[in-house]
Image (cartoon, rainbow, N blue to C red; front, side, top):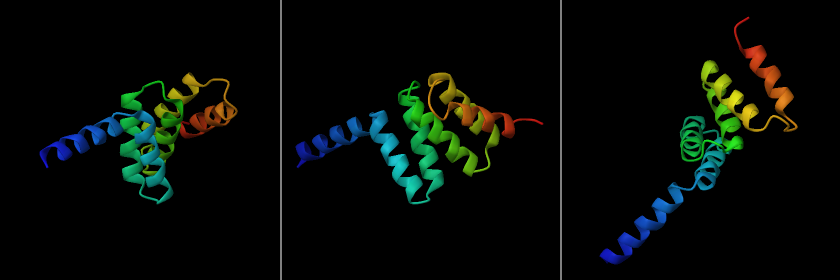
Length: 102
């Protein structure tokens, strides 16, 4: 029985160390409108892989949804930095400008 438990823990740890897997958990939480849990998962994803652009963008939306505007601006900025030629980069740059100090 100990072997099964150890094996399950190893699989679970590998899953939790995968930025894409953690991102997918965050997306599921987002779709279920569990925004605080989504934010936590997206934060973990960008911690595991700071170059994971989509996770930065999703983190920005989760933060914005929670009223954490300054942090959202930083997350969106990181996304734009990583994906400057993405189709939504211009929209996010405008959002950053609109959300920032007036």
